[in-house]
Image (cartoon, rainbow, N blue to C red):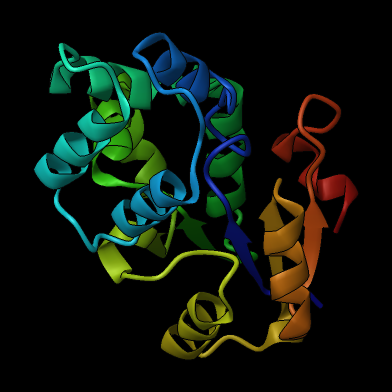
Length: 199
């Protein structure tokens, strides 16, 4: 029996355009998405570097005249809308008191600041969860096993009683290694509000 549900954030609740940031960076002069750039992004997602350091480091990959404000806009280009019916679904789920609800997201300070600014019901959304885990605040990121082990241990969750919902296959596969139940949500084909058809 499922007693706990751990949700991803991006493309589960807030819609993303995962190609938009790279396209925006290419307009600023980025020629290739190198391992160095990927490692920089992952370090920022884990909170290992500050926003200022991240933006300044990104400048090395762009044209000389590009400003940190332009880089910030390119970085946030991934973020789209947050359909309010998903909030209504989540609030209903919380009010039923049948499950413990958690959020576990790979994200960073710039993205979450933009979401707070542009999603008027962000606090209402956040308050639906017992705990709200963001990778840059806890220093870990999916699909590493330690982040799942951390959430299970901190909240005394049994893997077989826990459902994890994510749109990224490698994150799903990592959770399954620990015995966590999963739903690999297919973006544009499925919606998180269809959860009750899965339980």
